[in-house]
Image (tube, rainbow, N blue to C red; front, side, top):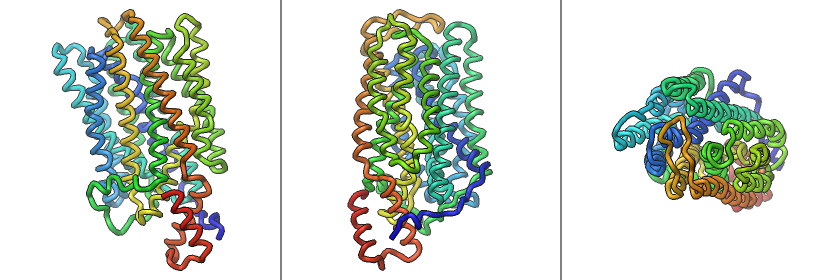
Length: 484
């Protein structure tokens, strides 16, 4: 029986809805990028905290994420309102993120007590992490439920990831530029705060609020609600295909966060240049690659798109890590471009594969707890940022990093600190993406198997799986052994 005939649905989304939904990932891509690039150096060089303590303050808030993300997945799965089970949280989070950003970036460097600074940093980041969970888990769940047309789902998720990357560009480059201007003494701390704390909070809030008004949820709700227990949190990990996606996503996201967190320190102290140019080069090359990747996504196995360029990315970033400090910075920019070229497929594919993994989970679990799936994914994303920042903070501390005594004057760093920045950034990236390469090679959910999954879901919905032909029974057993 041909699986393709079970993979046909009418187009369900209008262009305006696609754009509004995709625009919502301004928060997913932008806020995470901004925090990954700016928050550690904000705590060390603006607020004046010890780098190890600053990184620990961020990590503590992420422990809460270990609980809040899976809980949010179950809560949103069990929510029933007139506007759906995902959109109420996304819209409410849009209003609350304004407050969270205003508090998190408050310039408290003048406080005399370091203990008070640490408590305030932990408290405000805990609040932000909670709001981020309220937004991110339902939003990523909605990405698998906003349409039942698979090609349309692929299309809208590619669009949202392009938006996410554009947001990452804006929220990486502009804060990096603002920090450079601030350190040069061109603007004061109040202007720095108005842009980072108030301006970006409003920037993230608007599309989230619009999603609540102008999008729809189209997957049929399960009749029974999910039981609120530990098993509900980890249920998606029973699916082999989803576990493989988790490994791939973890490697990709930590690698990106390590690169983002380290490049400002690298450009300030190791190979003097502009962090804005480094990051702009990386993101610009990725954006150029996205139209090519989006054309391949329906014809080439998604896992191949993920791993194909990684050897190039690994070699490129080895070059960045080893680049001599007395050579022209142009060469380091060029190696960054090479890294971005090879990394683009891995950067895009995880969330394109996500709905396929949810389909596989539905076939195995006989329910579609998308919130639990997305809760695990968003937990990984936010935890990866904390891990990256923790790696950097500890490495800076043990290698003898010298904190600036003035926000407008850079100290001379010892050779050990310079070596520590190189190792923390480059070696970590290389190790993680090597693991990601082999994880993707072994990933079980090919495009053909995803098509088979949707075929049997359709049959189960229409007639049940009890009366399958011998041929289809054999096909189903083989599929289950491969992806479950």
